Structure formats: C-alpha cells, structure tokens
Image (cartoon, rainbow, N blue to C red; front, side):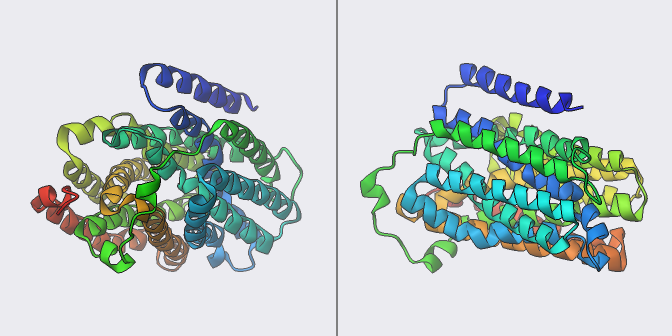
Length: 419
C-alpha cells in the first residue's frame, strides 16, 4: 500500500540526478531540491486532514481550521528568529533546526491523534509552523548559493518545482498511512511516516555547505528598516507575494472542509483536489524561468492576477468536484506566478548587509496575513457558506490588478537598483 510513496521518492532522486546532469548549478541547489519536498510534506498533510480531523476532536466545529491557522501563525512568528539564527549560525544550522522542529511536531501529532487530544494537535501544528519558518528560508539559501544573479529566476523555478513531490507525498501519506496505527479518528500512522521522511531530509542536508558571502558586503552599512520598506520595488514585491499567498491560503483552507464536511464529497475526491492544487502550485516552475526571460516579471504578475479572477468565476459556478478541482488548479498556478514574481523582486530591494533583516520582515508579513486568512476561512465558511468565501476574496484581486498596472507603468525604474 506504500508503493506510491516509494515510487515518488525514487522518482525524486532520479529527477534530481537527471536535472543536475543537464542544468549546471551548485551542488547545494540539488541537495535542497531533494530535501525540501520531504520537509514540505508536513504542510499538505495538515491542510488535507487538519480541518477534517479537528471537526471530530474539537469541542466547537468552528475551530476546525485552527490547526492550519496555528501552523501558519507559527511560520509568521518564527520567521524573524529563523532569519537571525541563519545570520548568526549559518543556513545549514538553521535548516537543521527547522527539520528537527518538524520531527518533534510529527511525534507530538502522532500522540495527539492517538489519544484524540485537540489541544495537543494544535500545539503540534504550531511547531510544524515553527519548523516550516526555517524551511521557508531554504529559498534564500538557494539564492545565496548562486554565483550568477541572473540565474535567480531559474534557481527559484527549479526549487519550486521540487514542491511537486511534496504535493503528492503529503496527502498520499495522510491517506495511505492513516490506519497504520490504531487511534480513535485515524491518521497517527501518517505522522509516523512523515517523521521518517524528515529524518531522511536531515541526512541529505549533511552534505550542504554554507554559502560563502563577501565579508565586506555582509558587514556593510545597513539602512533603516523604514527606508527599505518604503521603496516601490519592496512594496510591489511584498504585495505580489503576500496577497497571492493570502488568497491561496484562504480558499485552499476552506476547500477540504467545504467539500467533505459541507457538500458531502468523498475523502478520495477531496484528496485528489488538494493534491492537484499543490501540484499546480509547483508544476508551472518547469517553464516560469522561460516565461520571465521571454515576457518579463510584469507579464507573469498580470497572468497570475488574471488567473485569480478566473478562480473566483469558476468557484462561484457550482460546488461539484470539478468546480473545486478547476478552481484549485488555477489557484495553484496563479500563486506560483505571483509568489515567484514577489520573491524575484525582493533581492532588488536590499543590500547584502540587509538581507536577513528584510527576508525576516518579508516572511513575517506574508505568513502573518496567511495565518489570519486561514483562520477566517473556516469561520466565514461555516457562518456564511462557500460563495461568501469567494466573494470576500474579490477586493484583494482588484488590489492585485492595481499593483500590476503600477508595475507595468514603472517597470524600468523599479528594476533599476540605482533608482
């Protein structure tokens, strides 16, 4: 019954070796390519079963999305400490710290589901978030491991593509291993298997070498935080990534609960929709680097925003499985375009000596809004229904269109670091 999981792991290893042979990038990138999806599998598991499991364990059904919210809040609250640890101890130490937190969270979640303790499950979800805050810094470790800054879009695309494996592994582990251990509502075995994957990720990271930074640049004079975040390039970057991620979290969090608990769709169909969504978040990374080179970041941002408008239209068209599937597929693609745009623009807003500070602020804002959105998703869904969840996302899509138009008009000035 674990054949699909074993096949995915073998495919991950083979894909890494094939890509490394034809795409010349530092060894660090390929180690991160293999390790990242193993650790990232934790988030899809919580997204897929968190709300469903919590409706059975929690005393109040409206708290069903609390574990997802606390996971994202854990990312937001730990993003600044994660960046400071990376600055002081190096990327390798920080990544190991994050993976260790994920392992501890897996064991806590195992116990929580075994004894059906909702509060302990929420604590485990929070620690999952803390560990994920360190894992989120992997993209910056990849950027810093790249000698040629023109390769940044390509490196980010490759790294985001590895998330495709997490998209499959997370929900598959949750579903296949849910009855591996006896527990009142199932899923204890899912967290046991997840713990093994995280140990494997830690073993892979032994070969990672801290990126070498120019000491004179790293110790240069840093500008005040307010000066940096007032830059138009930072504002466009943070709005693209944050609004894109917040809307993605808002609609994605509500989907499993809406499909399975409210509209009565089968758990297998729900798993398929979530897997497809997370796959769509990362599969476009196969060609986004080419799109950036061919059409530019402004076009990628416009495409992502337009796709989000399509998500709202489809989501309001009905509540059948295919309505959810198409909406979540487009949601994943739109997120990919907007997140890649924001992440690529961010390094243009800071000097090397400012990188840890701005990366921390960026993640704190991004995941802080995501946490609030995931909490509101469950409340709005249970109080007002799926259509209202979609309607309340529309004003933010309009904001994205406004930011995109601004980016189009001032692209040359925004992309000039000396401006």
